[in-house]
Image (cartoon, rainbow, N blue to C red; front, side):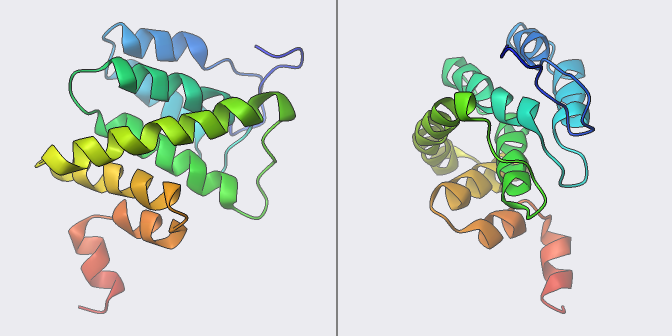
Length: 154
């Protein structure tokens, strides 16, 4: 952790690493739920969100099966980062954040090629779109088919 504590989406000190370690260790329900609650709230992110991305991507590199929750959380954090009111990535986290995005793209492309599960397809596609600078496409990719039909006026 940095000298100053990382902050959750609510602006409270939060270290995401224990929850990511629990996720790595097989707590695939409680740990991601905690991370969603602390790292992304209605589009709001903060320094703990940025700190988590590299660790989540490293976890994904170790997994045998794609984890839609991991892709979706990483894509949502990037979406939050791009929001006008979001804080900048702290300088000590910038390099790791950029490296994580470089590392997650090949994972998402690989998993997208094999995916049949709707959640994996949508979340991996959102990551690919963000990595390619297609941010509105990423936002739309995370929506359900029904939500997309509604957006298109169908």
